[in-house]
Length: 125
Image (cartoon, rainbow, N blue to C red):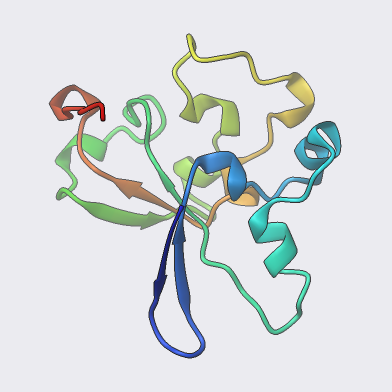
């Protein structure tokens, strides 16, 4: 996890995706609260929750390959937001139970698009 102080009132936090999930059904299964859920218990706190694509967004958003790289897209009310949360994972990763298949906009506010996954390179440590 990386914490970068942006100012006295803002903080950028990066970590794995399930640390930030908002949906209570998922949290009841793992018997824990996410970082976002804990932060947003305070009525003065609003989290801008950003997902990074881990699979092709083409099936969800047809014009995604024409977007500049990188791009930040707010998802509420768009095909990206109305799409099932499970569609953001490669089908071979794991099966997301039906009761956890909520609209993406209920979990995250935006998607950070880093280009087609075929152009990515990975480095192990």
